Length: 316
Ligand code: NDP
Ligand code: 1BO
Image (tube, rainbow, N blue to C red; front, side, top):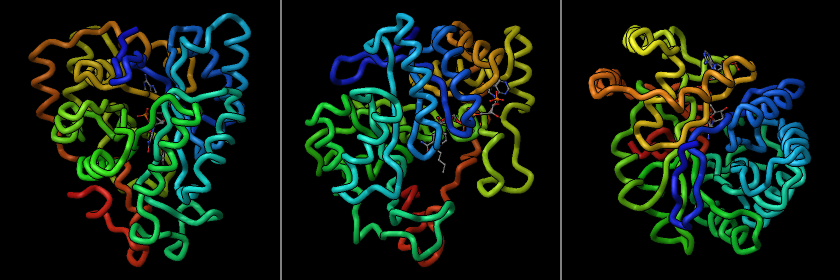
């Protein structure tokens, strides 16, 4: 298994299993199968509503011989627990659900705060604006989680280079990771370069185009990444599937990548992409597909009147 080396010296397996939208009733099997196949990195979040079942699968995998220190478990602080006094209790809840003593990585899911009982998507009145509750205040409480031994590393998710820079300047602990949407239609080369210069690693989410996400997060007539003709042609040439080409591309860029699947065959297929090597000409061809297309455009976190805007969110 290829690994990233974090500043702390710890290795993080680069290929992980995503669990967003993996329903209770299916995520247990997905995690057990993934660990059986060889995955050692599972990407979780409180907001996915399935951490208790992931925890059951992790506990049973460890009871049957997998060591805790072989696993890399990431989870994320949800937007409704950004008040500093809510951060450690939120992490404690995640650890209880996952049946763990510590996380390898705890991420701030979005740099956007909402009230405790906010709906999804939140109403305009349910936001707490960035002046009232800056993400830097939340970050300080996440740093305390590291000091308390509850998280080995902390980082951002959906953080722009500018926001990472703010954390670097104002924080005591530098972010170890930024987890962002990354695939051939949204290559984010400048963000990756920034992260590389500052020793921050990058994890690619929605690497297959997230076709199963809820309708409220979809646009009309979206391009389907898994059906892109250039990706299909490369897949045909290397006797691989389009998904494998997309995962291999993320690995070629030295990012971590966390494709989600609840299907046993596809979980294995995605893992086997770790052995696929793309040629320079494949990489050039894929490089030409960039169209700065966000499948998760963040619009639900920036309605007019919320105190947030898309310009603020992405700093672009
Ligand atoms: P992905 O891009 O991983 O796509 C998932 C979809 O692809 C599902 O419909 C899945 O179906 C299908 N799929 C999986 N493998 C294959 C394959 N080999 N061939 C064809 N179809 C396949 O979407 P996600 O948005 O789920 O992103 C991955 C993970 O990233 C998430 O699960 C989550 O852990 C994380 N994430 C983090 C975010 C953040 O804000 N930090 C935002 C979004 C995602 P099936 O399950 O039936 O196989
Ligand atoms: C708003 C969706 C977040 C998935 O990680």
